[in-house]
Structure formats: C-alpha cells, structure tokens
Length: 132
Image (cartoon, rainbow, N blue to C red; front, side, top):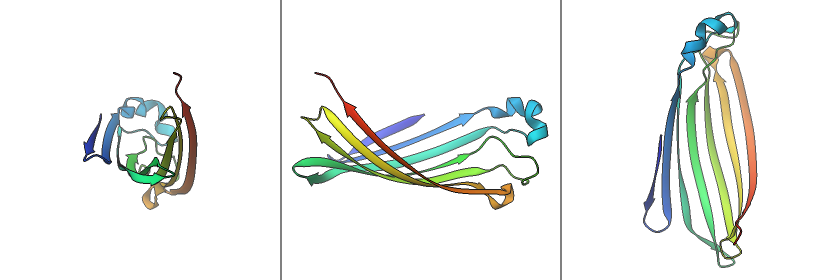
C-alpha cells in the first residue's frame, strides 16, 4: 500500500509499506536457514521549487527499511534487515515531454546478530520521452 500528498505547490510527500508471506516456505528452506514473513516501509519527499536555466529541477530524498525473508544457515541467529537512504534530481525539458532523472542510494544489509554485513551503493539514471 502507498500514498502520496501534495503539500503546497512545490512539495510532494510519499510513503509505502508492504508485507510478504514467506513463512509458508519455511519447511522447504529450513536446512539453509529458514524463512519468515517480511515487511518493509519507505518514505520520501520531492521538492519542485528549484529552477535551473528556467527549468524545474525536482530534488528528492527518502529512506527505507525492510526485513529480509531468508536467514543464512551458519551465519547468525537473526534474520537480516536492509536499510537505505536515497537522494536524486530530475530535469524536465521539451515542454515537459522528456525527463532525465538521476539518483544515488546508500544501503546496508544484514546486522551483527544476523552474521552478515553488506554495505552498498546503487546509482540510477533514466530518460523518459513521451510521444505527442
């Protein structure tokens, strides 16, 4: 489930959450660590009040937290989690018929009790062109 709200003319707030029922396969994967039901939550804001060369530059920041559904046998006693913070910028051009977006994410998977620790960076770039 998710929701978004436009606050004022330049600020958008978004949030979402989901739940998956992985525990149904726990018996099949018990030898490799087991499975659990998992949920995740994320949220962010987009500010559209910055202009560059008379074009609106949407600035975005957000975060998320999620439970990972599988535990690795022999690596720890707890199930791992994933946490991330994100930031991005967009550029609309061609009469808003095209959009270029770039983002960066810094995240961490695992946890000391899970016996695994994996920090990561993720970058994304996208171009959207709408036909007229």
